[in-house]
Length: 200
Image 1: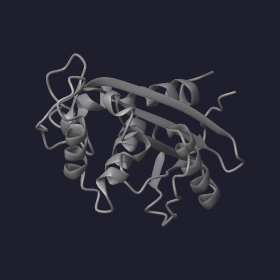
Image 2 (image 1 turned 90 degrees about the vertical axis):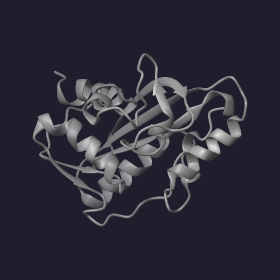
Image 3 (image 1 turned 30 degrees about the vertical axis):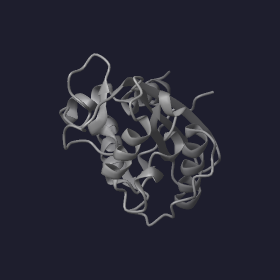
Image 4 (image 1 turned 45 degrees about the vertical axis):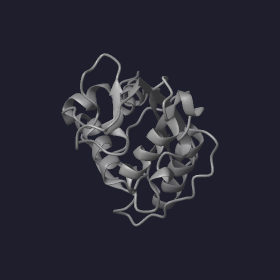
């Protein structure tokens, strides 16, 4: 049973400023006090799950227990068909300790080589955890093609090389407000909002 969210404060279990900003913007209509794990100086747990959902649950639970507040975690990444779903769970790790996504995108391009299949999708798994151990999970995906060279300086991560189906701009070129309406995170958030914020 999905639990309705009635608290006034929520921890976003992330140290990624871009991700925290996106989540705060998506929840802005609900007038919730959003605080990030970084602001609370919470630890970043090792992501040992074998799925996006498992990692999101792990991060949300750690933040909820450490803060005593409900916590929302996102685990997301890029899955490339021709690479067997890689980089997948390791999307951030491909960027190395310095989070160099230019390098990560170049690795994807190199591994794809001359293959004709450039289909890929972004996936976002959200976990909303309470200090009492209750957790609700939601997942969103958006499909598209990978382009080379990357285009655009907006967004973050692999956005400049991802061209969503039905659009002429990559996520790196797309205006922030437009990406916010169609992204994998937006799809997952709509499910979260329908279930936890606007439910009966």
